[in-house]
Image (cartoon, rainbow, N blue to C red):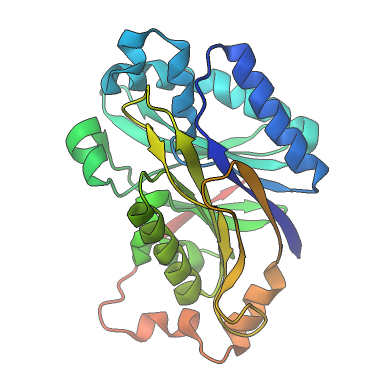
Length: 296
């Protein structure tokens, strides 16, 4: 099976109205569809640009911006669903912070199918900024999404730097790990990129990375955004020697496209020069972490 993916290098704009956001998202979907994409990946915290629709008192305050953007989740997801159905694509919507009934805020990515089904993956591991300043809490539970275009999991930014998360996805059948990210420096970008490449090596799978890019100095949450999209695989049978399938231009707004042959994952897992995926459980301390399978 082959699947064409589109990973966004997504610019954080000063979105002044819902109409402006709808136009922007419609254009991004249209561009991806015209280039044959079947799976669209948007980055971590990309939805925070919608805070600019509020007042300066709200968009300049971390906690108030959580409440404002989180309150738009249903409307955001409905728009993604309409566009996914129109273009017959699967989409991972840009993650957003949302409070639950207890008042705790979580960073949530949503997968939306062409038929409008919605499932979510909460970020599990919080960075220092999220823990100490923004007070975002870590979710519980790892999922993989079983779709007509393949099985994949979502490791949100910092999650990609922790191997057991992607390992649970691999064990549950994922041939792709999708990594939406938001980083404010080259240090942060390379931490996520190195983590993504390590997860591709360990699990002998594809890893697709989508970052936010550009400046939004009005926002205390996503004021500076540095990164490049990338698609990585194991440096082994059927994959590039350095494991880099394709990489975007640093900090430029763009879609990055790649056609992924998922049968290559099965081949390298069964007959690679090394068998990292198979041999994982032989290492000391390789305890089990189970992922739930969500059909979409």
